[in-house]
Amino acid sequence: MPSNTQILLARRPQGAPVPEDFQLTETAIPEPGEGEVLVRHRFLSLDPYQRGRMDDAKSYARPVALGAVMECSAVGQVAASRDGRFKEGDWVLGGYGWQTYSVRPAKALIAIDPKEAPPSTALGVLGMPGLTAWVGLEDIGQPKEGETVVVSAASGAVGQVVGQLARIRGARAIGIAGGPAKCAFVKDTLGFDAAIDHRAPLDPALDAACPDGVDVYWENVGGAVQAAVFPRFRDFGRMVMCGMIAQYNTATGAAATGAPPGPNLGPVVRKRLRIQGFIVNDTGWQRYGRFRAEMLGHMAAGRMQWREDVAKGLANAPAAFIGMLEGRNFGKQVVALD
Ligand SMILES: NC(=O)c1ccc[n+]([C@@H]2O[C@H](COP(=O)([O-])OP(=O)(O)OC[C@H]3O[C@@H](n4cnc5c(N)ncnc54)[C@H](OP(=O)(O)O)[C@@H]3O)[C@@H](O)[C@H]2O)c1
Image 1: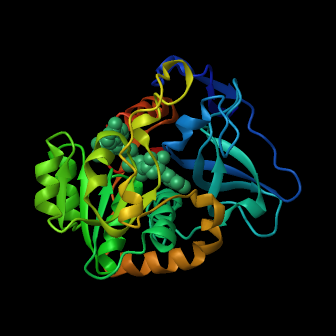
Image 2: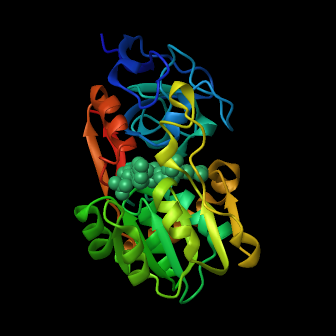
Image 3: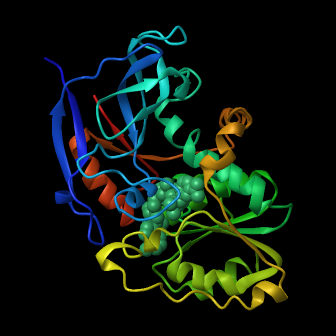
């Protein structure tokens, strides 16, 4: 009998997650009810926000309950449908959880066309991370011709799209990434104007890449990278607060040791800076059609490159997730299921 293989949250991490925080289990494949669809997952999306869901902490979204399936978005094919909008074999975005099947309300699914782009891209460049980049630039970053945009975690799922869109909008894009291979990819494949390795001294590299300062800083990381970029803002600079992954394993839970020292915010007034956080789910999906049409155009014209890091098999999801939080992923982290 085929079954649904799942990975559950076995316990809440103390600091960085470890394999014992997860539990692999088998359960019956669920049956769709009226208006629902059974999705057979083909690709799972591993994203930094899932680390937050593992903590029982107040946030904009509820935590995963202990013993419940780990949260994620999935791309898959319809295995059974009780809704006229979908038939068996259709590709969809909107599966749920670190598992091989999920039952979803048909209205929560987005149809995808594998002839338009590889299905896994619906989790990356054409999915939530790409949409995050697009929305954050549209609403907050607003790069203009000739401006300098600095992007942290530049080779990752969000960062790679931010820099390429910034360039398409006429700005200079400077990427910060961990190690020479990621930096070479950011500069040579993604076409950023410069790439800076955050494992080497940041100040001289930022002096060279941003001699006139920074107009937009896209914050994915926090910590030492933020401290080095922040003093370089020009007047009317914008800081797009997308995430602070450097803190995700330490800001909550037993490992909490207090907030790390932040930058001196005095220049915010003098330089008339704008610092704004956002969550893509607030209003992003209402603009998904416009985003997808623009991105497909860039992809067809060769203006938008992307890279995925594909882990194979559900059992390898915990290791891939732990690795992503440590910077071991190279590109958008997905898990391919057979
Ligand atoms: N606001 C929203 O709605 C929203 C939506 C999606 C994502 N996000 C945020 O966007 C950020 C990027 O997400 P993503 O999915 O694109 O992940 P990603 O960049 O594909 O993967 C995470 C990367 O973060 C970097 N990193 C991890 N720890 C670091 C540290 N201590 N110092 C410096 N860099 C570190 C690593 O890259 P290097 O090896 O290059 O350091 C790692 O590869 C995260 O903060 C995430 O929470 C926010």
